[in-house]
Length: 232
Image: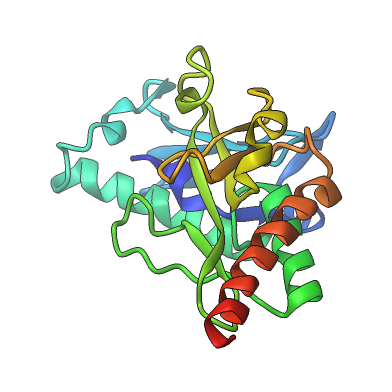
């Protein structure tokens, strides 16, 4: 069971963990709970970055119960253990985490800045479950996209960064300045869009929010000019 997906776009509220029953040592929070008639124990660990990890221990043998990781075991006893473990995780999520729009802190901060500056919020138009959390920012005057936030594998930009997922935002640029804008560190030719006219900015705080907002502002102004030209 890919339990970490249950916490995608959720942020831990650490003040609530101790009330829930977690113990804390060196800013690492640990929680245990027996279940399935005390035959199993859930061990949940939340690190200093708010990342969650966990496993199920079969108490009779004091060993990790790996069977629940095999998705081919869907029914019967293994399925019941998996379901009970998931209920524990969902309860922790509902009581100790907060739902966010995007996965990264910076993407969420930028969404708030855009809302404050332009009173525009992202929509999520994609039905495909693999990209359903991709958020589109549109200029309200003509419904044209000026930003697209995606969570993608960093290896599409940097080959040795396999299995590292990051939020990025695609924005429109002045294509005459393309070469001076792209640095191949945190600004790349766009993923999945016209690489001459759009860029992908990695939202890992290597650029400040205001630096990223200058690109968002340009992109939005460009789409706004499309309305002006159409009306003229």
